[in-house]
Amino acid sequence: MKTRRHGRDMPDSILLWLKSFIPAKTNIDRFERMRACAGSLFGILLVGLISYALLPHEAHTIWLIAPMGASAVLLFAVPSSPLAQPWSIVGGNLWAAFIGVSCAKLVQEPALAAALAIALAIGGMFLLRCIHPPSGAVALTAVLGGPVVHDMGYAFVLSPVLLNSVLLLASALFYNNATGRRYPHAQQSAAPHPHQTRDELPITRLGFSHEDLDEVLKDFNQVLDIGRDDLEEIFLQTEMRAYHRRFGQTLCAAVMSRDVVAVEFATGLDEAWHLLQEHQLRALPVLDRGRHVIGIVSRTDFLEHAGVEVHTGLAAQLRRLLHRVPFSHSDKPEVVGQIMSRPVIAAQVDTPLLELVPRMADGLHQIPVVQADGKLAGMLTQSDMIAALYEKNLAAARAVPAAGAAGSLRSAA
Image (tube, rainbow, N blue to C red; front, side):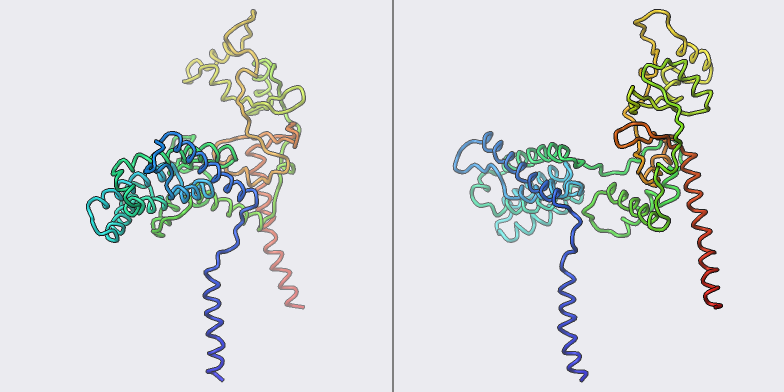
């Protein structure tokens, strides 16, 4: 019995082991797939046509190399990958081509030359920080490409390798940004710090820090096919979604101030400043005649346009800015529209409150809330957000003892 059972279990375990190699279902929608396919079509066609037009029309001329197909997969299907960034494709392909040609010239045995070319290409790409998998194929092409490639010598590095790489990169820069995909991606974290102090930003102090992520990546000690900025954003969004699941969602419409003091483009500076002082506000939304938000004017805007750099003479400088000039065609700003900030960072009435926490924690003091048609619906301030989050967490804290008491009553019954 045990033998038969063991015999039955063995195929099952092998089947489970084989199933573990099946890739998980991707969360990529049909549009993104078609976008990547169309991008590869556009990029390779453009590279081929331009290279064919620029290079001599001779039998031994190579105007498009096969590794560009692999590069196209990275640049158009996974443009956020560190392996697909500009320096990766240009630096990686150039270095691999140079190493491949050198190995082909110095080592007579093709198999050994190919192995050395791949090993040295990978080592150099690590050193130069330009890991690009298709570059391995470039190195092999330089070694095993036959007499035509060998006769080209180091000219192979410039044409077709450099030419193809630059043309494909240019097409990726245009196409990805034109279709809503940010490219290239920053490869180093450069978090803004508006206060210019040694303290981390508030949102970073409460969650994981940049140093925490760096240490984990260092311990992981593997090349990841995802940019550091994207990885950090995924972690933050995951934390936010987990908070939503635990405490529910609070929308801007439930928290925002609805009786908003606002001004129009042509409101005089003196009147706008008086409204800020009277209502003890930091900023005023600027509206057009249809009550669409077109800008925002803050105390900072007033100070900057008054030329205030030090505390001395602050009142006098503000008076000169707010004083109306009795004649027209003055270079001095006269109305709110001339000093307001735009474009405006605004939220929709149905935007979850937690999505705005990073912006509010890292410098913004107020955000206009608009309806679907862009008309002003309310104003969300840091005070509103603190009150809402406090109330939400307080309600959650009250629910825990209540649930415990209910369980005790059921047990007693």
